Length: 145
Image (cartoon, rainbow, N blue to C red):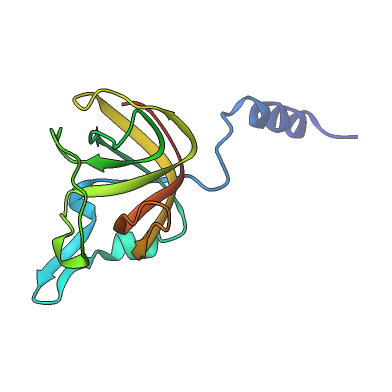
């Protein structure tokens, strides 16, 4: 038969808020790169260490190519034009491509949002659009920050 202390500890543990098994790491644009050299931007240890893991990030949605799509560019500051790039060398240090888990209508470019999803690091070209990205958040969702 359990004693009073065991019963109280068990009851108290049920009242504690549940935490996800894998909490997402919050990233900022300042966290993305450690240096810039003749070889280009170098990803930070924080980014490399979170490759394939859940992350959250806040920023602004750059104007998309069309009103409803399954990806957009998250930028550090509001942008008037979408910052599509043609090569790794042209890749800006203040954007991240976000691939949503479903197509949805986008937010105003001046509204701050928070994105959550899985981080992918390394150059990749989207076969449907030809869009090149060096850093992506995939299987993502977003909402107001």
